[in-house]
Image 1: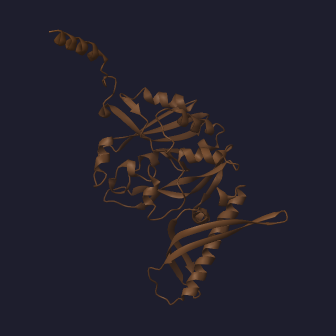
Image 2 (image 1 turned 90 degrees about the horizontal axis):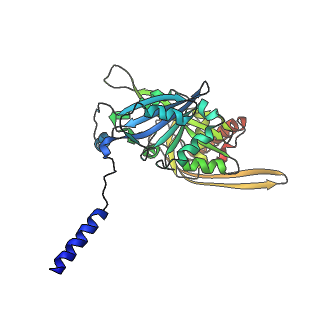
Length: 334
């Protein structure tokens, strides 16, 4: 009898000590932030909050047409935090920031003297992560955030959320996450390059309006004092060759008969050595690449193609380097 009483007593005492999940919110009762756009106009922060529907992520392997792939909230405030809290007033469920994938800034926002404090706010917030990508744009934030990936893929698979998805096709410039940005701004040069995102209208669908997609148009150079400028289009192609990472892309150049030839190029190796002569410092750049020919109509020797590739790569590197000097930036080492 005593054993039964003792067992009952222990059960009665320990039951109230068992923990549960009573204070946890069910996933379907939360909104999830995928990206945030930051602008600055008329001494006001303009914040765009992209909320995604997580039920569409499971369908990302097949084409689908979700009713609302994303909702874009917009608010202004004297500080970024004030603008975000203004958005909270119109949201009817809890917002979760732990799956946030990217930040995108306008040119005006990056030129603002307090832009570093915006980065710091996202670093300090307990739910956000250092792995979120950071982008820069000169286009409309609202338009960019409303763009749905090709074939209505989930927004979590977009170029803004996961820029490395397209690495096997072409690498224009390396993506930058929040951790890279903080390290870059604290290195001796105190500068870092951000991918410049633009709107591409090269695609069409059966709908009445042309389809839009995001594209990487160039880079913006950010320092602790704000945005120094942008290198755009063909003048930025030299960036491809000055990163010590394997990447691939295309190269178009003229043959001896003045005919154009496009080849696939995969960079294998980069080595930069300083050469000191008195008070002058120069650098020797050694780049090794593999070149693939997909076909051409005119005759060309292997030596002619090799010389054409070397000449074009040198031209692209020097064009980007000289453009960077106009912004007081040594683009080779950012």
